[in-house]
Length: 503
Ligand code: BG6
Image (tube, rainbow, N blue to C red):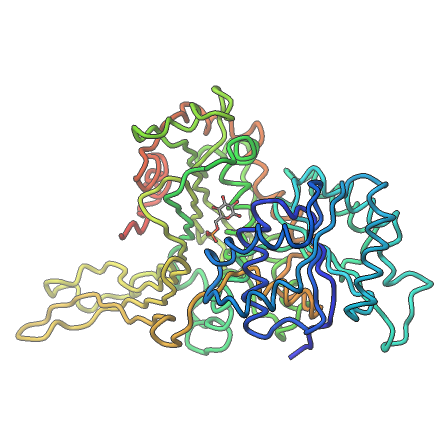
C-alpha cells in the first residue's frame, strides 16, 4: 500500500456546509482509523475572522453528529490538527499572509512543503482561487526550481469538488485554468460516489470473478437500471439547485461514475492510468441523442406540493417559471461492441418514495424455454442482479428454482450478500478514503479531464434548448413520495420494460 505523506490539507470554504458536514467528520474518521500521517494538519480558509479554537468549537458538534464512534479523547487529539486562516482566497492580498502561515506550519509540523488544496467553495470561485494559488507561487512541484531529490521534494495537489463546470464549455475552461497551475497528475476531481464501498466493489465483482464477465454484455443482458432516489427536498440550497437540477447534480456526476464501472471494459491492471483510461473510453462511447430524439430519451419532473412544503417552482429562491428538473430519467446507449443496442436507464430524483441508490442488471430470458408447456413458467426474465449501494449495501442475485412438492412449478428466489452481515463493517463517510488517496498520490478513483468533458458532452442535449419539449408542463408533475412522473414509467414502458420500484 502507498504511504500517506505528511501534508497540510488546505480547505478553501472552511465555513461551508460541505466542510462541516462531510469533510471534517471524514477526516476525524480517518484520524481514528490511523489513516493520517502523524504530522498531517488541516488549515481551513474562509473570510470570517475566527481563531483556531473558535473553529474547533464550531466543528465539534458536527463531528459528534456525523462521524462514526465519537470519543472525547480522540476528538481532543484530532482537534490539534485543526487550524484556521481568515482571508478571501479569491483575492491576491490574501496570499502573502497565507504563504507565511503555511511556511510556519510546515516548519512546526514537518509537513515538508506538501500541500493538498481542497476547493469546497462556490464553483464560480474555482478559477480565481486556482489563479491566485498559482500567482502566489504556492505550486512548486514540477517547476524548474523545485527539488528533484526525493528526500526534500515536495508536492502540491488540488482536490476539486463537483460541480465541475456547469456545461461542456465551462468544464473545459476550468480544466484549462487548473492546467495552467497544476499538472494533470496533481488534479483530483472528486466524486464522493467513487468512495462508496459498493461502487468500488462492482469492479471487484466484475473483474475478480470469472462467472460474470462472460455474460456481461448485450447478448445476455437485456438492460440496466441505475437509480439514485432520495426522499429529501432541496433544503436551503434552492438558489444553487435552480441553476443545477438533477442531471447536473446527480446524473452527469455521480451516476455516470456508476455507469462507467458497470459498463467499462476490463482494465489490463488495477492502476490509476488503466482504470481511468477505460472510464474515458466508455464515457466517450455514449451515443448522444439527436435533437429529435431527446424527448423520447428522457423524462423530467418537478415535485408537487406535499401540503407542508410548496411545489418546487413555488419555493423561495426558485424562479416561478423555473423548468429545472428535480427528477430526471434518461436512456443511454453505447456505441460499442459490448453494449450495442442495450439500454441503460438512469434516474435520480428528490422527494421520491424511498432513498434508493442501486443498480439493476436485468438478464435476458433463456434462449429456449423447455418448460414452456409447464404451468408456472412464463418464459419471463427472472435473472437479475441488484446491487444496492445505499441505504443498504447488498448484492442480490435472482434465479428460478423448482417449488418443492408435486408437479413442476417455478419460483424466483434471491441469493443475497449483505455487507453489514458479512463483514460487520459500518459504512464510513466516503470522502475520507478519497482524501487519503489524494494524500497518497493515488488517482484511481478520481476523474480525468477528458472523462469529465466527455460526460458533459453526453448530457448537454438533455440540458440545453434541445430539452425544451421534455420540460413542458414540468411543474408539479410528480407527487412527493412517488417514484417519479408518469413520463418516467412511459420511458421504459415504450420499450416493454418497467422500473424496479420495490420498497
Ligand atoms: C450531492 C448532491 O452531491 O449528493 C445532493 O449535491 C445529493 O443533492 C447528494 O443529495 C447525495 O449523496 P448521497 O451520498 O447521500 O447519495
